[in-house]
View 1 (tube, rainbow, N blue to C red):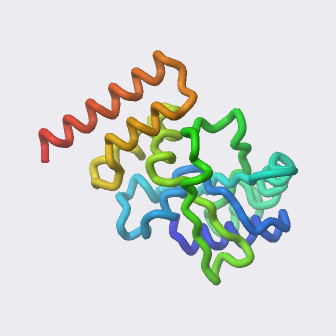
View 2: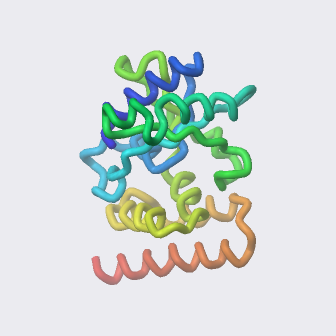
Length: 185
């Protein structure tokens, strides 16, 4: 996905919900920190943007976005990308303090919507916690490109509510990938 696609989604989601601030919680959140031209292909290959809302009626707003511009909607069929409305609470694992580190993105092309993107290391923790192949590929690509600081990822992992055995597995994965990348580079 390109920033222009994300801006289009922000405009539409903001209009649908009458809410300017939209939290981008999935992989496209990386566009708040980097231009798509500076990212590895694995980081911009998705055609969906996971959008969430803060405050009152967050779930209702996510559902409205999902219904209007979500997967298989007319919007998706017309533009080839879509928004998936999601709820943050209970579904997405994030480190303590993530809201204080949100990367704000605003442009004329996204107005009236404003992106609140996860900080890149918080995003990595969220992806690692999901532990799906596509999420691991995403984090691996960012590590390989030098766009993540492994010690910061590990610090943030310690701030997330991840059960002990899973947290140890994630820590071991980051350490192993980092060691392989250092050995090859």
